[in-house]
Length: 281
Ligand SMILES: C[S@@+](CC[C@H](N)C(=O)[O-])C[C@H]1O[C@@H](n2cnc3c(N)ncnc32)[C@H](O)[C@@H]1O
Image (spheres, rainbow, N blue to C red):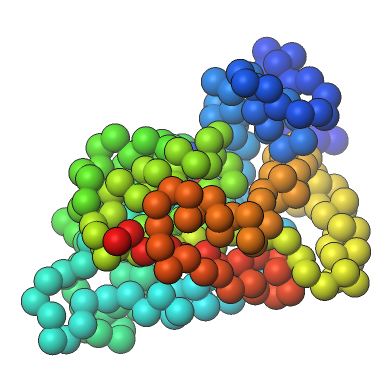
């Protein structure tokens, strides 16, 4: 038994595998009208929102927690003790709050920074509510004047001022964007000169043996999704969206094309995922 994520109307819009044209795009391995993609992605994340941790633990065998810890530690975020300028962070596609709260926790623990601000931005109100609920349950970053929760499309960020942020993070979010170059341009626009774009995303496994093992695991994931979360389709989409996301070098050049400099990346766990970064000059 599995629960269909898509309405009949949405499902009719899906055609079989192939290349996307001018007015169509990929939704996992399917081709859909461009204007429908964010709605379809929305269905997926509304569907998984309440079981978000389970989903991540299933998909990564729990390793996503280590990747996220490493992601934050490598960034080393926070207002330095000799500075009087709080930092302005934005975490895009940040629904769960994992990265946003992790950054604020780290800044406080390492630098005693209790002043820097955070915008947690997500296109999906259900995911954002999940993050806010966590903040409330954990008694931190809820009703906190330093933290804003905003429903925003990462491809536009139209409520975010240009040149206003020191650090832009996006974790396991950008592969869901309909138009990734537009998302990168929006990131570039909202960052101050000197600001850092910093992304954690699934990537291309570089070790052939690991790749074979991962392909087998990926085939099983929708079945686990069906058993654990009664949700085959969402997990199928998530696996397909990982397969479609550009490999390390390609994504690096997309970041460069958006205008960033000092671009680089670090592959994690044989390339299952990668951290990419760039600086707005
Ligand atoms: C896998 S979750 C990642 C959540 C969190 N960043 C983390 O690492 O745990 C992907 C998130 O991307 C969001 N998302 C998808 N497309 C988006 C877009 N165009 N703009 C902003 N958020 C988007 C989804 O709503 C979802 O919350």
